[in-house]
Length: 270
Image 1 (cartoon, helix red, strand yellow):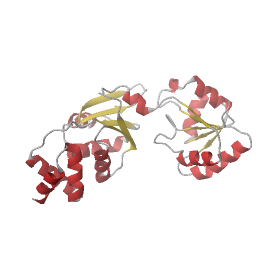
Image 2 (cartoon, rainbow, N blue to C red):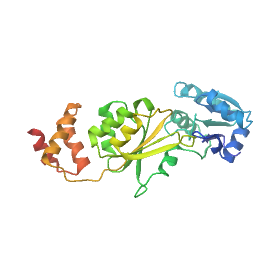
Image 3 (tube, rainbow, N blue to C red):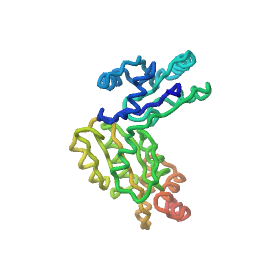
Image 4 (cartoon, rainbow, N blue to C red):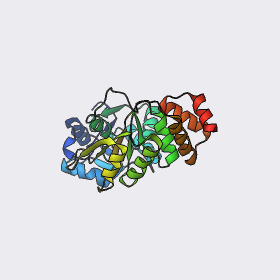
């Protein structure tokens, strides 16, 4: 135990995915800071871990940062865990880590389960490049903007079950029904499932299935193809209906389809 503060990855579903080193650290530290003590206690009780526990989430992170720094300066050791997976990957902790660095406190990470890497390992990809955007925004406009920005590569995001269909329909409207999608649910659990297909097929499938827990989604990189003037005009109209300016619509279509901006602008003016 050479560090003062530990970032510890915990299982994303199957409790058997905890590492031996993670168990050693959680048993050895004086305190464990976690998102939800009720969730973390399930894991701790399974492995007979008796370290003291307190909550540290996005609503009290600044206050808890002061407590953790005070504990460490008094000679105690602290571990941070999230409800599932690797802390700070679409989870709270950035405020705390910033404060720990300011106070020159030694930090080490205990690697383990992470939904992103588990998901990626099951997908067919031509290269290692990908973009991860965390939880995708709720509004259609923000979704289209961020997915357009990442359209040069495979783009992974998290989504909630009750918003999945709406998000997929927005992708279909903005990027075409032939857009390739992968969706993972219940990763590492009994009903683990990964579905891959065009966005229309994925929508049809999940409209008839009950979903639980966070979902991992990947929008595959779209291969550029020559679009007819009529198809480009229809896409301009769609983007304008969603509230995009002509300037933004021209930029989005240019990035997505590799078309000349001047050509698209002239079509938009029609």
